[in-house]
Length: 274
Image (cartoon, rainbow, N blue to C red):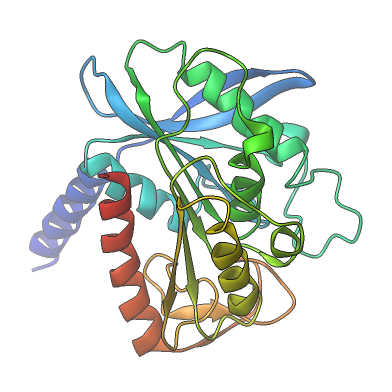
């Protein structure tokens, strides 16, 4: 019996390993040094549609894992759909840990992290396996706030390459952007829970509705009853007030967050397929 259980356990480990390919670490030139990133790429020569994925304030990875479960889950889901996924490590590349409760952050969403997006895009434009006209953005919390800055018309790349195909922002902090008269040059989808206790659903609504006067490219989906971090992999929990992503204490709302997570997976797939 013990031998049979051991064999079954080994088979499960092997199947899990096959289902979860390890990412490849890449180095991207950055004005101030090197931007480290993790790359999930389909087999073959491509060209592949590619997604630049931007982590939240908790950082990209942990002590034993270069990519936290939430980002790994999304990367593997996007990979199965035929996309390559590039995850820049904005904090680790600068030898910084999580920035959720840091009063004076040295890596700003609107400044250093937007520069990281530009560097990642420039690097991808030089890769033969990339479908250059199908590079999109996705971000969570602080990474989603970065995305909102990156898609503003003022931040358009000056090279001749194609612009981003689409952008998807999970529960960004919309308050500053709403007050600044935000607009986007890229089809941008904002996903947020109606009960988000960290970001502000009303501010995100105001931001997107205000943008419609300048651009018809933005859309918002508010998931009823869902909280912050509703899409975390394999967990029904959401972050409590005072933080911006998975590093915070949590309390559970199983049903509404699970429904929102499933709906967001469909919404992301449809937005990227536009």
